[in-house]
Amino acid sequence: VAAKEALVLAEQEQKSGNEGLAVIEDKKQGLESGMESIYGPLKCGKLPASEVQDGVKKIEQLAKDLSLDMSLLLALPTALAKPLSIRGSFDNVVMSQIEAEFQRCLAKFIDELANAEPARKEHAAKVEAASNEHVHALVAEEKAKTAKEAARAAQNDAETELKALMKAQLKAASDMRTA
Image (cartoon, rainbow, N blue to C red; front, side, top):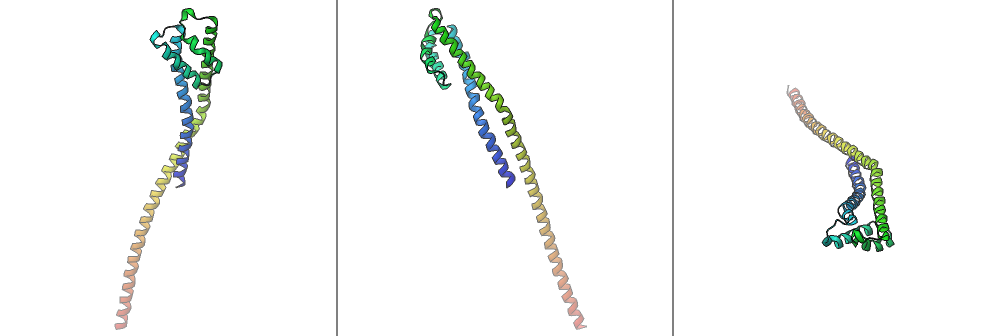
């Protein structure tokens, strides 16, 4: 029972630790994907005109999800929506600042994931150890059950033999009285 409880606890710790890492990993992948498939083409002016507004909205949402500076969020849609040929110096500053913020967030996610790796490995090792202990406890329990059954069988045999001996003793005592 204790081994099972230890295993359940270790698995719960691993799950809760990994859930936090999964959220960070999802944010990292979302940022990388957004930078590559939407921001990059918007910045270079290579996103088809029909997709620009949708792309701007997605980058704006990504920036909001990352809690970037509000003043940057206000200037971003205008700068992103302009064709490359008519962007001014302010638009270029906005673009470089958003890119720097994206890179900062990406570096933060990578750092958090790297720093969490030892804890992830520790949780996995705890689960493995608890699992092994649980297996050993189950084996020991099975051996104990087998030994208990063998002891019961031996006890039953001994009781049967005792009854036979007592019966023989009574018969011998009866035979001695009659002789």
